[in-house]
Image 1 (cartoon, rainbow, N blue to C red):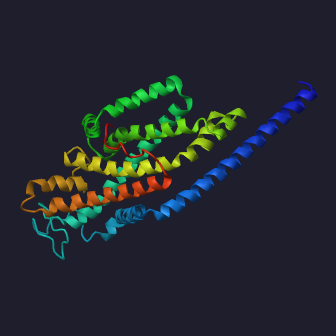
Image 2: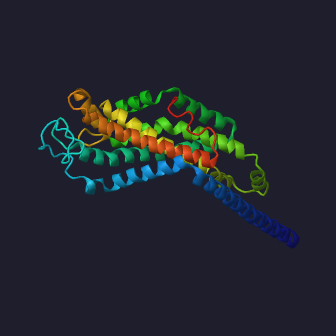
Image 3: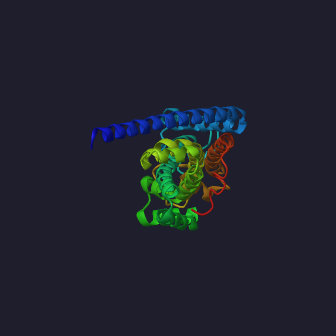
Length: 316
């Protein structure tokens, strides 16, 4: 290579780097404008505010539940079927254990499983949706046929089948619930990537030779974070419902672990004699999932995201 060719190559490289810097600056400005609009809308969304307040309360309860609990969850010397009182605000169960303590401890277990399952589903689903939407072609067809296969199975059947195969326990419940909701993340992300793929900043990034990993990580992911966050809020609530349902059926976490689903299962045989054993854990599930859904709905409206969460519970 002669001197003139070397200089030309250096100028081309410098121009490409400069163009990439300009694209990065424009992308940052675009995200900043979007962030300001989202924050302005979010401040007007009362249901998002109500939802996040309750979510924060449940998270704090989950973190400090061992400190807040007045008794050990396995203490069983309080008398059987004691109705709610000042000493036992939620009464005692069929083994003489304080139900208030078990509901507090169960908050940590249920929230942890729901959050871990949502995060696992997000990591796998976002990766699959990103690859399918960006590359298209045979890879898109292959990934989406696998997603359609997951979508064809109702959530409860898929999770029960997974737990029945691999056994009960917190880890297997997380894996089963995460597998059931991978398709939701994959579909949302793929749709967003297809929308962004022909945007001007994407065409410009490809025209200057930016590598695929940089385009996906630098330009696509930051622009689809809003629908991903919204989907996570719905997935956590659905994960809590799935875990409670599995535990109610005897396929969830270890029976020695206090959970809301386990309390429901133990109280169903005594619903007429001791209604509180089932009612209070059921109220905890309803309030937590409702708070997450309110927060998710508020975020969806603030982010102006269409379709996210609309099909939750249908299919896988």
